[in-house]
Image (cartoon, rainbow, N blue to C red; front, side):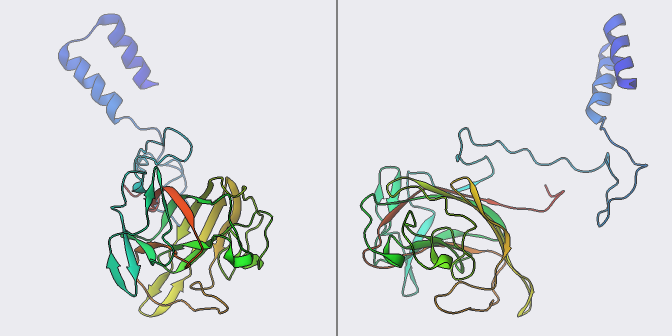
Length: 275
């Protein structure tokens, strides 16, 4: 109210350079909020605190699925420079072939691993089975996206094709089936949006487990689901200490498991009130 009054006076009478500068400073420094309200539980801030930092501005993608301004773009259809191949523990340049705006799994060449490391993050990934995908059960275009190279969300053709529930597309492999199956037909692009909360360790002791939220083709299939440990086949592997950030991994499941990937980006997630 005081600011509006000052503006009316300036507009009516005009202003000198000094007066205009002063008014500009008032407008610039003015912040809505209060300091006489209760402290929020578990926080240091008052309700509607005038001193609370403003969130960092992020420019969203121009189209659905496009990376926002703060994303690390791991594949945009132009090159494979953010990835390396790993087979028998030896890193090499990628051998998975690029075809137009996507790349294909190179069956038998080894897993693809990101050069950057990530902990808490938001991942966007698009993948496609071949229209003529063949095989049964786990043999229908099998791959996976491994958060921190350890925690797998299954990639598979599960469109009117059945396998064990915690191993179908969208499953947190070997632990949790997807809540529903929203998969499109083979030959159509599928999307995963994964919000991953990394586990924390104190020495070798697990302090808090990993959590995962997975949105499959726009449909929620896991809602902040706790992970039992690392992913495994026919076993329940425990957690093992690792870094706060680790590479992402795309699985080469071996011969006769071809599929494609495109538009891969990641946002590193920070806490509230963090620049």
